[in-house]
Image (cartoon, rainbow, N blue to C red; front, side):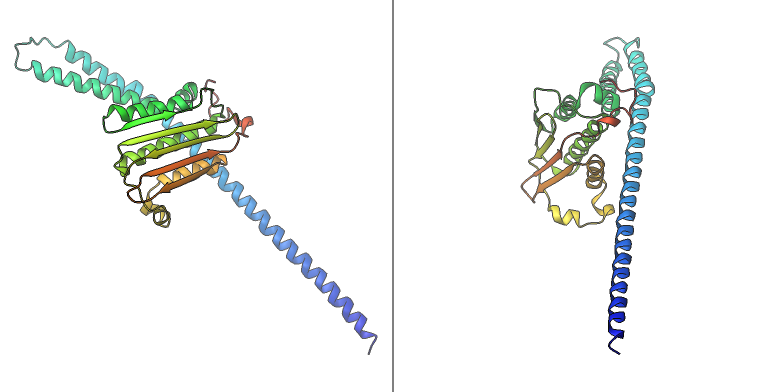
Length: 269
């Protein structure tokens, strides 16, 4: 009877080893599956955002080539209309010319904001300043911007994504904040990039907004998170009712140098 105990111990030991091996296999399988799923999600996200940028590029070209040209023809037609200053229609034609000129300028600004090649050509700092200047022209906002004197060196993909995030932040300020002042501070230490956008608007309860469903809170926050997730950066939102909002975007390093021209092979340095 006593001889059976060692055999039982051996069976227990073997069973334990088999159980541990089985658990290890399952854990490894789960980890592998999650990594595979994450990689798949990243690829889908990358494809989605790249398609979006190409749509913006095509839309920008269409606006410039078609709508812009049609409006220019209308402006020339109004300018060449044989109407003297004494004619009752003179003032109306002059007003129409001014309105068409304003629309042409707005269309041009929109086309520039959408086209990724232009953003890459002038750099993210100048592109953001252009967006702030558009807001200043409305006379609804006072804006300021601080940025490094040196060129902010980013890969093609990261520069486009960061700029779109800033665009989204500014759009949200215009739509929801009731702010009067917008301040942007950009930082770059040779590797890490930071962007802070601050407004003096009505603010909001960050936790309450983030707890809402995607449909309820809109696509703004989701879009920012998705873009930063794609390039390995972070977004921090600080706000409270009545105290404005500060959004800090941070990209640690710019490691994806190998795919600098993958999404936009024709972009200029």
